[in-house]
Amino acid sequence: MYQVQFKRLEGNEDIAIPRKMSEWAAGFDLQAAVGEPIVLAPGERKLIPTGFAMAMPGELEAQIRPRSGLAYKHGITCLNSPGTIDADYRGEVKVLLINLGQEPFTITRGERIAQMVFQLVPEVTIVEAAELQDTARGTGGFGHTGV
Image (cartoon, rainbow, N blue to C red; front, side, top):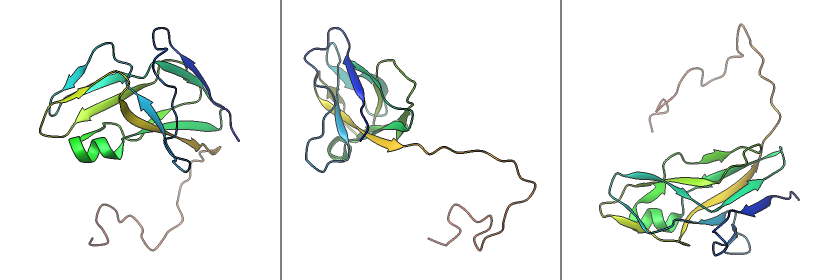
């Protein structure tokens, strides 16, 4: 088991630290720590604060992902999905939201706006090669299977 430390930032004592909303949930819900309601117009994007910073072991990364209910009901999603938080980042966690819906959407303080999923980061060594081993797929990409 890995331990991740969360630090509430000053003035955000009313914002819950990330938590799972069910026993088997993969993601920890993040709340908006906005000072006043923020309206996202259709097509508009904004960086939304969460009111906390964190420290996690170097073997982990945190991925910020959309909440399915906001995406389905309102077209609200994370623009760089999944967003990556590296283990050495100590600043406030923020969520880049965009409104892909057709109506303005208001984000209020304490609203659940995204989810955070932790993933293991393998140690990888990059090796330059003059040639690569061939495969049946070869260089086929972007629709090469006809689907």
